[in-house]
Image 1 (cartoon, rainbow, N blue to C red):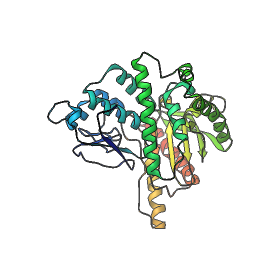
Image 2 (image 1 turned 30 degrees about the horizontal axis):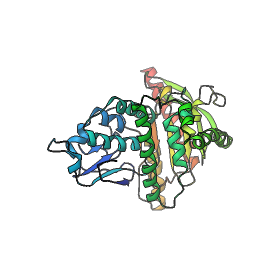
Image 3 (image 1 turned 90 degrees about the horizontal axis):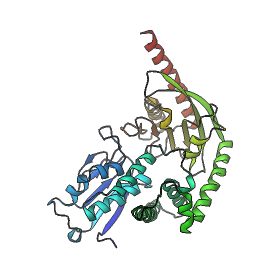
Image 4 (image 1 turned 60 degrees about the vertical axis):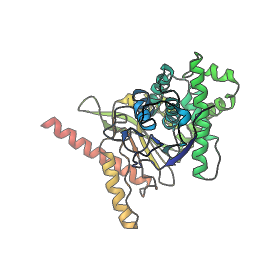
Length: 358
């Protein structure tokens, strides 16, 4: 049983926060300093929050124990703050931070868990991993079973369920089990048979999403050369698959180039959009958020809504591979997104054409 008395609070994505005594901010805050460990800003190291924690435990310890005396029994109640709808990195970070406070140390299994989390958060989960036997997919499936009314309740339940699961896999790694790509292990526990079935069935949900999607080719900037690279793009409205990103990147059958979709564009009827590039394609979306923000600002001015910017993925771990719409729902339609992509293509071709002639 933990010696710590911790309460959890969830705040909007991208919130700017300052250090407070007895409060630890994780995977949000827009800073990397004692008391606030976040990677979503340009000055952050190329790490996720979990990998930052194990590489720099002093960001936790120097804040929680300013006298440098590791004594969890004497700590007052603590508050951990993370972002709304906590994801894999947020949940693992909550767990690792608690372990660091309790022990004052980082062990090899914590490092292994953090490195796996970095793969997940950067979108680089190996395609060879069986989704029915990897923690990321299992946690997504567990989250899909949370049916509560309010966002606050959902956030707290995700933290409860997530911490319980991460604690389980961490303890199993201490016992010597491989927990990162091991379907037989999860089947043998008896507790995850239903979850494995949910993941298996989710592939057929993906195929249903695919029937309502649009596939096309885009030229995107290469991260390793001064050239454009053609990638398969998929646009899906109102997706229902919980592992949509993973299925698209593994889908060689339906992708035009038969290499798996390199860009996924998804949106809901509430104007919540996400654009993400597969790191394996070695391309990015740098500059696209500027076009989207310009159009977003103009449309909001006409309707009287205050402007809220799109997130452009400007941090070393993402390197402009991710773009997310405003938290209050974009004013743009899916047609506007398509037109923005066309304008982005024209800008890119003009820019790279000028480079060739200079």
